[in-house]
Length: 332
Ligand SMILES: Cc1cc2nc3c(=O)[nH]c(=O)nc-3n(C[C@H](O)[C@H](O)[C@H](O)COP(=O)(O)OP(=O)(O)OC[C@H]3O[C@@H](n4cnc5c(N)ncnc54)[C@H](O)[C@@H]3O)c2cc1C
Ligand code: FES
Image (cartoon, rainbow, N blue to C red):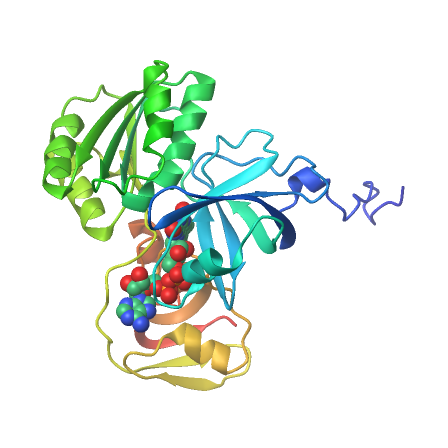
Protein backbone atom coordinates (compact mmCIF):
# COMPACT_ATOMS: atom_id res chain seq x y z
CA UNK A 1 0.00 0.00 0.00
CA UNK A 2 1.41 3.46 -0.84
CA UNK A 3 1.28 6.40 1.59
CA UNK A 4 0.40 10.09 1.32
CA UNK A 5 2.89 12.89 2.11
CA UNK A 6 1.47 13.16 5.64
CA UNK A 7 2.10 9.43 6.19
CA UNK A 8 -1.52 8.31 5.98
CA UNK A 9 -2.28 5.30 3.77
CA UNK A 10 -3.41 6.07 0.22
CA UNK A 11 -6.92 4.77 -0.32
CA UNK A 12 -7.53 3.06 -3.64
CA UNK A 13 -9.49 5.17 -6.14
CA UNK A 14 -11.68 2.18 -6.97
CA UNK A 15 -14.75 2.10 -4.81
CA UNK A 16 -16.43 -1.19 -4.07
CA UNK A 17 -19.20 -1.49 -6.67
CA UNK A 18 -21.88 -1.25 -3.98
CA UNK A 19 -20.72 2.34 -3.27
CA UNK A 20 -20.66 3.46 -6.89
CA UNK A 21 -22.59 6.58 -7.81
CA UNK A 22 -20.71 7.68 -10.94
CA UNK A 23 -22.43 7.20 -14.32
CA UNK A 24 -22.50 3.49 -15.16
CA UNK A 25 -24.51 1.15 -17.35
CA UNK A 26 -27.30 -0.83 -15.72
CA UNK A 27 -29.45 -3.45 -17.41
CA UNK A 28 -33.24 -3.29 -17.68
CA UNK A 29 -34.55 -6.40 -15.90
CA UNK A 30 -38.27 -5.78 -16.34
CA UNK A 31 -40.72 -3.30 -17.83
CA UNK A 32 -44.25 -3.22 -16.48
CA UNK A 33 -47.04 -0.72 -17.21
CA UNK A 34 -48.65 0.26 -13.90
CA UNK A 35 -51.20 2.75 -15.28
CA UNK A 36 -51.95 3.77 -18.88
CA UNK A 37 -49.31 6.55 -18.54
CA UNK A 38 -46.84 5.19 -15.98
CA UNK A 39 -44.36 2.38 -16.57
CA UNK A 40 -42.26 0.69 -13.91
CA UNK A 41 -38.70 -0.16 -14.95
CA UNK A 42 -36.47 -2.44 -12.88
CA UNK A 43 -32.73 -1.93 -13.37
CA UNK A 44 -29.88 -4.08 -12.16
CA UNK A 45 -26.18 -4.83 -12.43
CA UNK A 46 -25.30 -7.00 -15.45
CA UNK A 47 -23.44 -9.42 -13.15
CA UNK A 48 -26.27 -9.46 -10.60
CA UNK A 49 -24.21 -7.73 -7.92
CA UNK A 50 -25.75 -5.72 -5.11
CA UNK A 51 -26.23 -2.03 -5.97
CA UNK A 52 -25.42 1.05 -3.90
CA UNK A 53 -27.77 1.48 -0.92
CA UNK A 54 -29.68 4.71 -0.62
CA UNK A 55 -31.70 6.77 1.82
CA UNK A 56 -35.48 6.69 1.36
CA UNK A 57 -36.61 9.42 -1.05
CA UNK A 58 -33.44 9.25 -3.18
CA UNK A 59 -33.32 9.48 -6.96
CA UNK A 60 -31.07 8.42 -9.81
CA UNK A 61 -30.20 10.43 -12.90
CA UNK A 62 -30.80 8.57 -16.14
CA UNK A 63 -29.60 9.32 -19.62
CA UNK A 64 -32.93 9.28 -21.42
CA UNK A 65 -32.12 9.81 -25.08
CA UNK A 66 -30.70 13.33 -25.34
CA UNK A 67 -31.91 14.28 -21.84
CA UNK A 68 -30.61 13.55 -18.35
CA UNK A 69 -33.64 13.16 -16.10
CA UNK A 70 -34.04 12.41 -12.39
CA UNK A 71 -36.25 9.52 -11.29
CA UNK A 72 -37.03 8.56 -7.70
CA UNK A 73 -36.21 5.08 -6.47
CA UNK A 74 -39.23 3.30 -5.05
CA UNK A 75 -37.49 0.76 -2.78
CA UNK A 76 -36.52 1.00 0.89
CA UNK A 77 -32.88 1.49 -0.12
CA UNK A 78 -31.26 -1.32 1.90
CA UNK A 79 -28.68 -3.44 0.01
CA UNK A 80 -30.73 -3.32 -3.19
CA UNK A 81 -30.14 -5.82 -5.99
CA UNK A 82 -32.48 -3.79 -8.16
CA UNK A 83 -33.42 -0.16 -8.66
CA UNK A 84 -37.12 0.38 -9.40
CA UNK A 85 -38.30 3.59 -11.03
CA UNK A 86 -41.77 4.52 -12.26
CA UNK A 87 -41.92 7.00 -15.09
CA UNK A 88 -44.93 9.09 -16.10
CA UNK A 89 -44.94 9.55 -19.88
CA UNK A 90 -45.12 13.17 -21.06
CA UNK A 91 -45.81 13.23 -24.78
CA UNK A 92 -43.43 16.13 -25.37
CA UNK A 93 -40.70 14.22 -27.20
CA UNK A 94 -38.54 14.42 -24.06
CA UNK A 95 -36.81 11.89 -21.84
CA UNK A 96 -39.85 10.17 -20.33
CA UNK A 97 -41.27 9.46 -23.77
CA UNK A 98 -37.86 8.20 -24.88
CA UNK A 99 -37.66 5.77 -21.95
CA UNK A 100 -41.14 4.41 -22.71
CA UNK A 101 -40.31 4.00 -26.39
CA UNK A 102 -36.78 2.61 -26.13
CA UNK A 103 -36.29 0.57 -22.97
CA UNK A 104 -37.07 -3.12 -23.07
CA UNK A 105 -35.82 -6.10 -21.07
CA UNK A 106 -32.09 -6.43 -21.73
CA UNK A 107 -31.55 -2.79 -22.78
CA UNK A 108 -28.78 -0.92 -21.01
CA UNK A 109 -29.08 2.57 -19.66
CA UNK A 110 -26.60 5.04 -18.16
CA UNK A 111 -27.44 5.67 -14.50
CA UNK A 112 -25.85 8.15 -12.08
CA UNK A 113 -26.44 8.19 -8.31
CA UNK A 114 -28.38 7.44 -6.13
CA UNK A 115 -28.60 10.96 -4.75
CA UNK A 116 -30.52 12.07 -1.73
CA UNK A 117 -32.39 15.37 -1.43
CA UNK A 118 -35.49 14.20 0.43
CA UNK A 119 -34.38 11.93 3.26
CA UNK A 120 -36.36 11.42 6.47
CA UNK A 121 -35.38 13.17 9.70
CA UNK A 122 -34.15 10.41 12.03
CA UNK A 123 -35.56 12.27 15.05
CA UNK A 124 -39.14 12.33 13.70
CA UNK A 125 -41.59 10.57 16.03
CA UNK A 126 -43.93 9.89 13.14
CA UNK A 127 -43.87 10.36 9.35
CA UNK A 128 -46.84 11.88 7.54
CA UNK A 129 -46.25 10.97 3.89
CA UNK A 130 -48.28 12.83 1.27
CA UNK A 131 -48.37 11.77 -2.38
CA UNK A 132 -50.33 13.02 -5.34
CA UNK A 133 -50.07 11.56 -8.83
CA UNK A 134 -46.58 10.46 -9.85
CA UNK A 135 -45.30 12.03 -6.60
CA UNK A 136 -46.07 8.62 -5.12
CA UNK A 137 -42.59 7.34 -6.10
CA UNK A 138 -40.42 8.88 -3.34
CA UNK A 139 -43.32 8.52 -0.90
CA UNK A 140 -43.44 4.77 -1.55
CA UNK A 141 -39.72 4.62 -0.81
CA UNK A 142 -40.29 6.40 2.52
CA UNK A 143 -43.26 4.15 3.29
CA UNK A 144 -41.28 0.97 2.60
CA UNK A 145 -38.35 2.15 4.73
CA UNK A 146 -40.69 3.11 7.59
CA UNK A 147 -42.29 -0.34 7.35
CA UNK A 148 -38.88 -2.05 7.35
CA UNK A 149 -37.66 -0.19 10.43
CA UNK A 150 -40.98 -0.22 12.29
CA UNK A 151 -41.36 3.57 12.28
CA UNK A 152 -44.81 5.11 12.78
CA UNK A 153 -46.07 6.34 9.41
CA UNK A 154 -49.26 7.52 7.78
CA UNK A 155 -49.69 7.93 4.03
CA UNK A 156 -52.13 10.22 2.25
CA UNK A 157 -52.45 9.32 -1.44
CA UNK A 158 -54.40 11.63 -3.76
CA UNK A 159 -54.97 10.25 -7.24
CA UNK A 160 -57.23 10.24 -10.29
CA UNK A 161 -59.51 7.23 -10.69
CA UNK A 162 -57.75 4.59 -12.79
CA UNK A 163 -54.41 6.42 -12.67
CA UNK A 164 -52.96 5.51 -9.27
CA UNK A 165 -49.49 4.03 -9.64
CA UNK A 166 -48.41 1.76 -6.76
CA UNK A 167 -51.74 1.93 -4.95
CA UNK A 168 -51.63 -1.85 -4.48
CA UNK A 169 -48.18 -1.62 -2.88
CA UNK A 170 -49.40 0.95 -0.36
CA UNK A 171 -52.61 -1.00 0.32
CA UNK A 172 -50.56 -4.12 1.00
CA UNK A 173 -48.39 -2.29 3.54
CA UNK A 174 -51.55 -0.93 5.18
CA UNK A 175 -53.23 -4.36 5.22
CA UNK A 176 -50.14 -5.79 6.95
CA UNK A 177 -50.56 -3.13 9.65
CA UNK A 178 -47.22 -1.47 8.75
CA UNK A 179 -48.75 2.00 8.16
CA UNK A 180 -52.06 3.86 7.99
CA UNK A 181 -53.28 4.72 4.48
CA UNK A 182 -55.77 7.48 3.64
CA UNK A 183 -56.89 7.76 0.02
CA UNK A 184 -58.61 10.58 -1.84
CA UNK A 185 -59.84 10.35 -5.40
CA UNK A 186 -59.57 13.69 -7.23
CA UNK A 187 -58.26 17.06 -6.10
CA UNK A 188 -61.13 18.47 -4.00
CA UNK A 189 -61.35 15.36 -1.83
CA UNK A 190 -57.57 15.46 -1.52
CA UNK A 191 -57.53 19.03 -0.23
CA UNK A 192 -60.16 18.19 2.38
CA UNK A 193 -58.27 15.06 3.48
CA UNK A 194 -55.00 16.98 3.74
CA UNK A 195 -56.68 19.67 5.81
CA UNK A 196 -58.10 17.08 8.22
CA UNK A 197 -54.98 14.94 8.62
CA UNK A 198 -52.55 17.85 9.03
CA UNK A 199 -54.59 18.99 12.04
CA UNK A 200 -54.49 15.74 14.00
CA UNK A 201 -50.82 14.66 13.95
CA UNK A 202 -48.90 14.15 17.20
CA UNK A 203 -46.16 16.60 18.14
CA UNK A 204 -42.83 15.55 16.67
CA UNK A 205 -44.31 14.41 13.34
CA UNK A 206 -42.42 15.34 10.18
CA UNK A 207 -44.36 15.56 6.90
CA UNK A 208 -42.95 14.67 3.45
CA UNK A 209 -44.93 15.54 0.33
CA UNK A 210 -44.42 15.09 -3.40
CA UNK A 211 -46.83 15.88 -6.19
CA UNK A 212 -47.98 18.57 -8.60
CA UNK A 213 -47.20 22.24 -7.97
CA UNK A 214 -50.74 23.17 -6.81
CA UNK A 215 -50.96 20.24 -4.39
CA UNK A 216 -47.65 21.20 -2.80
CA UNK A 217 -48.87 24.78 -2.39
CA UNK A 218 -52.03 23.51 -0.67
CA UNK A 219 -49.96 21.26 1.58
CA UNK A 220 -47.69 24.13 2.66
CA UNK A 221 -50.58 26.53 3.18
CA UNK A 222 -52.71 24.06 5.15
CA UNK A 223 -49.73 22.87 7.18
CA UNK A 224 -48.65 26.37 8.17
CA UNK A 225 -52.32 27.22 8.87
CA UNK A 226 -52.53 24.23 11.20
CA UNK A 227 -49.49 25.49 13.13
CA UNK A 228 -46.74 23.29 11.66
CA UNK A 229 -43.24 24.80 11.72
CA UNK A 230 -42.07 25.06 8.10
CA UNK A 231 -38.96 23.04 9.07
CA UNK A 232 -41.23 19.99 9.47
CA UNK A 233 -43.08 20.41 6.19
CA UNK A 234 -40.64 18.77 3.77
CA UNK A 235 -41.37 18.49 0.09
CA UNK A 236 -39.88 17.35 -3.18
CA UNK A 237 -40.72 18.93 -6.51
CA UNK A 238 -40.52 17.20 -9.87
CA UNK A 239 -41.43 20.41 -11.67
CA UNK A 240 -41.65 24.15 -11.04
CA UNK A 241 -44.33 26.72 -11.88
CA UNK A 242 -43.68 28.74 -15.06
CA UNK A 243 -41.71 31.93 -14.39
CA UNK A 244 -41.80 35.32 -16.11
CA UNK A 245 -38.87 35.96 -18.49
CA UNK A 246 -37.24 38.56 -16.18
CA UNK A 247 -35.13 41.57 -17.16
CA UNK A 248 -31.77 41.64 -18.93
CA UNK A 249 -28.81 41.57 -16.52
CA UNK A 250 -25.02 41.50 -16.74
CA UNK A 251 -22.67 38.93 -15.29
CA UNK A 252 -18.90 39.13 -14.87
CA UNK A 253 -16.83 35.94 -14.83
CA UNK A 254 -14.28 36.40 -12.01
CA UNK A 255 -11.49 34.25 -13.51
CA UNK A 256 -11.41 35.92 -16.95
CA UNK A 257 -13.14 39.28 -16.44
CA UNK A 258 -15.45 38.41 -19.36
CA UNK A 259 -18.90 40.06 -19.33
CA UNK A 260 -22.08 38.25 -20.35
CA UNK A 261 -25.46 39.85 -21.05
CA UNK A 262 -28.37 37.61 -20.08
CA UNK A 263 -31.44 38.60 -22.09
CA UNK A 264 -35.04 38.19 -20.84
CA UNK A 265 -36.24 34.60 -21.18
CA UNK A 266 -32.67 33.25 -21.41
CA UNK A 267 -31.03 31.60 -18.39
CA UNK A 268 -27.60 32.41 -17.03
CA UNK A 269 -26.94 28.65 -17.20
CA UNK A 270 -27.52 28.68 -20.96
CA UNK A 271 -25.22 31.70 -21.38
CA UNK A 272 -22.48 30.02 -19.35
CA UNK A 273 -22.77 26.76 -21.32
CA UNK A 274 -22.72 28.71 -24.60
CA UNK A 275 -19.56 30.49 -23.41
CA UNK A 276 -17.87 27.12 -22.79
CA UNK A 277 -18.23 26.89 -19.00
CA UNK A 278 -18.89 23.34 -17.92
CA UNK A 279 -21.68 23.96 -15.39
CA UNK A 280 -23.46 20.87 -14.04
CA UNK A 281 -27.21 20.94 -14.50
CA UNK A 282 -30.20 18.65 -14.50
CA UNK A 283 -33.77 19.93 -14.10
CA UNK A 284 -33.22 23.46 -15.50
CA UNK A 285 -36.24 24.62 -13.49
CA UNK A 286 -34.79 25.43 -10.07
CA UNK A 287 -35.82 22.25 -8.27
CA UNK A 288 -32.69 20.04 -8.11
CA UNK A 289 -29.81 22.41 -7.09
CA UNK A 290 -27.30 20.82 -9.53
CA UNK A 291 -26.44 24.15 -11.15
CA UNK A 292 -25.39 25.96 -7.95
CA UNK A 293 -22.53 28.39 -8.62
CA UNK A 294 -20.61 30.68 -6.24
CA UNK A 295 -21.33 34.42 -6.37
CA UNK A 296 -18.67 36.99 -5.48
CA UNK A 297 -20.71 40.19 -5.60
CA UNK A 298 -23.92 41.75 -6.87
CA UNK A 299 -27.56 41.20 -5.95
CA UNK A 300 -29.15 37.86 -6.77
CA UNK A 301 -32.86 37.56 -7.47
CA UNK A 302 -33.34 34.00 -6.26
CA UNK A 303 -36.03 32.18 -8.23
CA UNK A 304 -35.30 28.59 -7.27
CA UNK A 305 -37.38 26.37 -5.01
CA UNK A 306 -34.62 24.57 -3.12
CA UNK A 307 -32.21 26.98 -1.40
CA UNK A 308 -33.24 27.84 2.17
CA UNK A 309 -34.10 31.44 3.08
CA UNK A 310 -30.82 31.52 5.01
CA UNK A 311 -28.79 30.41 1.98
CA UNK A 312 -30.57 32.94 -0.20
CA UNK A 313 -29.93 35.80 2.22
CA UNK A 314 -26.14 35.28 2.16
CA UNK A 315 -26.05 36.17 -1.56
CA UNK A 316 -22.96 33.97 -2.04
CA UNK A 317 -24.49 31.33 -4.24
CA UNK A 318 -27.18 31.00 -6.91
CA UNK A 319 -28.92 28.37 -9.02
CA UNK A 320 -28.10 29.74 -12.42
CA UNK A 321 -30.79 27.87 -14.37
CA UNK A 322 -33.52 30.15 -13.01
CA UNK A 323 -32.08 32.86 -10.77
CA UNK A 324 -31.25 36.26 -12.15
CA UNK A 325 -29.92 39.47 -10.58
CA UNK A 326 -28.14 42.78 -10.95
CA UNK A 327 -24.45 43.31 -11.79
CA UNK A 328 -23.42 39.86 -10.59
CA UNK A 329 -19.85 38.56 -10.48
CA UNK A 330 -19.65 34.79 -10.41
CA UNK A 331 -16.67 32.77 -9.18
CA UNK A 332 -16.03 30.69 -12.28
C1 LIG B 1 -35.68 14.78 -7.86
C2 LIG B 1 -36.63 14.42 -8.97
C3 LIG B 1 -37.24 13.18 -8.98
C4 LIG B 1 -38.12 12.83 -10.01
N1 LIG B 1 -38.74 11.61 -9.97
C5 LIG B 1 -39.62 11.29 -10.95
C6 LIG B 1 -40.30 10.02 -10.92
O1 LIG B 1 -40.11 9.20 -10.01
N2 LIG B 1 -41.15 9.72 -11.94
C7 LIG B 1 -41.41 10.60 -12.96
O2 LIG B 1 -42.18 10.27 -13.86
N3 LIG B 1 -40.78 11.81 -13.00
C8 LIG B 1 -39.89 12.17 -12.03
N4 LIG B 1 -39.25 13.38 -12.09
C9 LIG B 1 -39.46 14.23 -13.27
C10 LIG B 1 -38.50 13.80 -14.38
O3 LIG B 1 -37.16 14.07 -14.01
C11 LIG B 1 -38.77 14.56 -15.70
O4 LIG B 1 -38.79 15.94 -15.45
C12 LIG B 1 -40.07 14.12 -16.34
O5 LIG B 1 -40.00 12.73 -16.63
C13 LIG B 1 -40.34 14.91 -17.62
O6 LIG B 1 -39.23 14.79 -18.44
P1 LIG B 1 -39.33 14.80 -20.04
O7 LIG B 1 -37.94 14.90 -20.54
O8 LIG B 1 -40.15 13.68 -20.54
O9 LIG B 1 -40.22 16.06 -20.25
P2 LIG B 1 -39.98 17.43 -21.04
O10 LIG B 1 -40.01 17.11 -22.50
O11 LIG B 1 -38.79 18.11 -20.46
O12 LIG B 1 -41.28 18.14 -20.59
C14 LIG B 1 -41.52 18.42 -19.22
C15 LIG B 1 -42.76 19.29 -19.12
O13 LIG B 1 -42.47 20.50 -19.84
C16 LIG B 1 -43.59 20.92 -20.56
N5 LIG B 1 -43.33 20.89 -22.02
C17 LIG B 1 -42.20 20.46 -22.63
N6 LIG B 1 -42.29 20.59 -23.95
C18 LIG B 1 -43.50 21.09 -24.20
C19 LIG B 1 -44.20 21.46 -25.38
N7 LIG B 1 -43.65 21.30 -26.59
N8 LIG B 1 -45.44 21.96 -25.25
C20 LIG B 1 -46.00 22.10 -24.04
N9 LIG B 1 -45.40 21.81 -22.88
C21 LIG B 1 -44.17 21.29 -22.97
C22 LIG B 1 -44.70 19.97 -20.19
O14 LIG B 1 -45.39 20.52 -19.07
C23 LIG B 1 -44.00 18.74 -19.77
O15 LIG B 1 -44.79 17.98 -18.91
C24 LIG B 1 -38.39 13.75 -11.07
C25 LIG B 1 -37.76 15.00 -11.06
C26 LIG B 1 -36.90 15.34 -10.03
C27 LIG B 1 -36.22 16.70 -10.05
S1 FES C 1 -30.44 22.56 -13.00
FE1 FES C 1 -31.78 21.96 -11.37
S2 FES C 1 -31.78 23.72 -10.07
FE2 FES C 1 -30.69 24.32 -11.83
